[in-house]
Image (cartoon, rainbow, N blue to C red; front, side, top):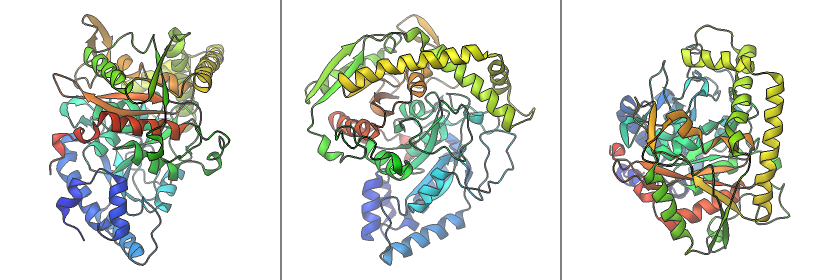
Length: 479
């Protein structure tokens, strides 16, 4: 057993913790104890968890893991590692709410495929994280279970809908969390809370027994403290039959060695329009400072202009609303929705079939444009994850570009939704802290289909360039 102070200092790296567990220097029992102590102290303030698994059950599982490892039955780098799930995943014997009043007392009888894979990898489920009701929002606000709060400033939003998951990882309440992303729900809270969040290639990770929002747009992904940690989790999460799809192209193959990618030349694409039309000055400054720094590290910058950008939002919205309305019509019949979700379902029922089909055709055209760029002209595309840092809890609109007022929801979704529509892998990593309020700002890296490990490898390289990861420890985690 190691001293808890040592655990606390290295709590954020799955890789480091896994090495200690494998060597017998770190006890899974001590590790879950540290996580539970953090939850007890911080959850009442930050509201990250809706449900925490029974403590005795957690410690029993940790003791089993420790015994297995001592007997030489070490499974891999997630063995004995505590994790959480957004409360959209079913987990056997655990309360499932989807952030709704409707499911308040429902106990799941099954495990989602993703939870099964984590358990098979030896990870220990700690609990279920807070979210927008039915994942239908981008702020992390919930009328039934309270709002998840930003660990850098509890008067600000965490982002959502996987807000509780991002808060839990940022504060060390957990080492990683599984989330869902339909318009930015993993990447946005990751950016606002200073952690790494991956939306994988569409359908790379199973959505079985994860409550749907919009099946054509829903992605299952994860949140952790680094690109390396996310890569470890993804390897256990993804559908194994997809791993060799791009085997013939070594640059595009999944799960390449992250360290070996450090010295490779990278071509970065930066769009000249849309993603940069409305930027908070701190976001703009930090992004372009990074671009200047990146150009000194075997990185070529290519700028390009996008078409059809005026169609990004409406094409995504038609599909999002129509499919959500259909999902709830078929799966949930209740008046116990919040006003916001009721309005969403009403609006979704108004989407005409012809508009839905037209949006699908528009998205195919947009995807073709991105594929041509990513397959022939550049390795990845980079943009700010969000155009603003975390707004205050009571803010409905924020000012960008000195005098332009933009709705918070629109500002948070603007740079992420299109990559749900076209299904490309996208990861958000911390890039810097805003000047005045010292709030995290994220960089989004987008790659070709099934180029998830390419995206994570470049994210890993960027982490070494910025050397920022050690700075992303909010003061609220000091326990």
